Image (tube, rainbow, N blue to C red; front, side, top):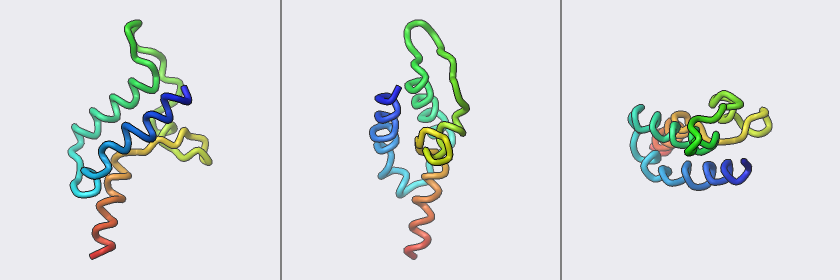
Length: 88
C-alpha cells in the first residue's frame, strides 16, 4: 500500500503539473484521472473491485490531518492558476 501511495504522489500527480500550471482542467479529465488514481490505490485487478477503506476526500487530506497526502487535483489546479494572478 505504501508503494502505491508513493507512485500516486510522485508519478500520477506530477505528470499533469505543466498542464495544470497553464490551463484549467476540464472536469471530465479530472474525474478520469481521479478514477485512475482510486482504482490504482484500492487495487482494482482481475478479481474485480476491491473495498475502498476510506473516502477519497479523506485520502486527499494532509498526513497531519489524518489523510494520506495525495493531491486533490481540482484544488491544486486552481492554486496553480491563482499563482498566475498573483504574479500579474
